[in-house]
Each structure stands twice: as structure tokens, then as C-alpha cells.
Length: 378
Ligand code: GMT
Image (cartoon, rainbow, N blue to C red; front, side, top):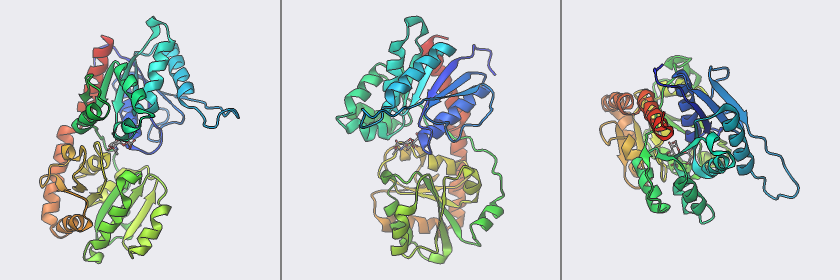
């Protein structure tokens, strides 16, 4: 722990499976380990947040349903809870992950409090809060307002910073703090996991995502259907969501024997250490935490070259980037790494070194800490 004064930090994120919630939870855990008091405020306990960890508190937001409202409102009860927690625990900082509606709720919460009790608001943009909702006229002006009134704004990649400036016409400062991942020790050995998956010598190709349309699971399966020979690999999908809507595609493409799905896995490390390469076919991606998670286990990724991914993967050094969205091109890149084990291992080692050097928890959490101290003058 450092000798500098500790801070009281409120964190709001989506608690469900998703990169922004994972980063917010990991950040809270690291901050608490550094001696700060951390208060999570959300409608559910974030799924990767440990129970009973010292200095980590959880404050649920209760949403009542009223017959008068066609759609239940979350923003107002969230803002009231943020104001209450800020006042009762004298928060220095409210750090919101994903602007909609968290940043708006934080700005409102701050305005509800007398000046002496107001926390500083830090907003971290994660992706579709800019690239999708920022383009929606029903959200854009509210996001712009919340960013303008935040005490600091961060983005998880240079790409997202520039998209925020472009899409929202926002010209305030944005600090880029990349994502980080601190892998836990796997609970099972690589062999045990491969046995569970029924693998012998096949190359394990991993895809881990929330399966939203932006991930283009259709393109992922079309790619896999073109990889030859079929017997050389298995695709393991760690699905943070319901895979059922894609089952028909798996059958149509005759992939029943080479696709294995595991839903809502919490021990991702078990599967990451068993993987040989990872495959991502997203339409856009501000960062792609799944790629970084794989890098930490010396597993190189093949990905479409979109959004902030070239900030994570260096083509031909720590993975392979494929321009465009042609499944044949993607399949050829996968085949290259399936058949060239030496290249796969070289890229994997370089990926792991890069993850440790450029995307470590120690480095990124220190950047957030420095930002907090700057905005609250402590
Ligand atoms: O923006 C989203 O679609 C949701 C968000 C999430 O909660 O998973 O994903 C974004 O944030 C992640 C964590 O910073 C990034 O790794 C993802 O690339 C990003 N998703 C997109 O940009 C599509």
C-alpha cells in the first residue's frame, strides 16, 4: 500500500457478463487491495466481484414497477442511490463505466448534493456507448452533456477517443487508459480441461464473447466451416449469453462435431490456458478484452482488423489481423496458425510479453489512481 491518502471511490457498471463490467470489477478489486474503500452501486452484484473481500461494498439499486410507466426507469433510482452512498460514505470519486445511463445518473447525483458533499465524476467510455448510442439522436445529446460535465473522461483505446470526438463532436479532454487483465491461477490443468472438452491432438480455437450482433457470430461460424482439415481443430465458444439462436447455423454448416459451447463460464482461465489460438470476427471493437485475456496465456489471436484491435494485436508479431470480412481470408489465417505450430508459439510468447508489458493491472490501475488524485486534489 502507498503512503498517500486512501480514497473513497464509488463504481457503477453493468453487472452482467461483458467487458466493461469485468474491467470495472477488476479495477475495484485492485483499488481495494491498494487500501482504497470501494463502493459498487448497481442493480446486481457484478458477477466477477469477490464476496467478502476487504474494503469492497455493494449497494443495490432497487427499481419498483409502477403501472403508470410503460417502461421502468433505472436512471433516477440509480442517481438517488449514488447521491445517498456519496453522502453517507463521503465518496471522493464516482467512477462510472459505460456512459449510458451511468454518466447521466452520476451528474444528476452530484447536482442533488450540497457542494461540500459532491464527489468528482469520472466517466470511462467502453465502446458502444459512443459507437452505437452516440449516433442515436435519442441519446447523443445526453451523452455529450454528461461527458462535458464529468470531471474527467477516459476511453479504453485511442480509436474510441477519436470516435468520441468525431461522433459526439466532443472536444473536452479524453485520457486513454487501455484495458488490463490480471489472470487468476487456473483451477484445473490444461490436460483436465482438454479431457473435459473431449480433445485429443486437435488445436483448440477459442472464442469468448457476449455474442451480441457486433461480434458477428454468423461470420465466425462461416469462417470455421471453411477451415481444413476439419479434424485438425475444435472451436470452443465461451458464450456470455444464450447460444441457442446460433444452433441452426451450426447444423446448417455441418459443424456439430467441431463446435463446443460453454455458457456463462466464470473460470475463464481454465479454458484460456487450454487454448492454442483465439478467433474474433467483430464488426467493430473498441479494444476486445477477449484478445487480451488470451494474450495473458500466450495464446495468439486472429481477428478482423477493426476499431481499436490494432492497438492490442501487432500483426504478424503478437497475432494476425485480417483486413475486411471475407470468411475465406479469415479461414486461411486460422489454417496458417493451425499448421505452423512454431509460428503459433512464437506469436503467443510475444503476445504474453506484450500483455505483461503494456496491459498490466499494475500499470493501468496506477493511471486511474493518478487521475483520481488529480481531479480531487489529493
Ligand atoms: O460497448 C459494448 O458493446 C459493451 C462493452 C461491454 O460491456 O462488453 O464492450 C466494450 O467494452 C469492452 C471493455 O472495455 C471492450 O473490450 C469491447 O471492445 C467493447 N465493445 C465494443 O466496442 C463493441
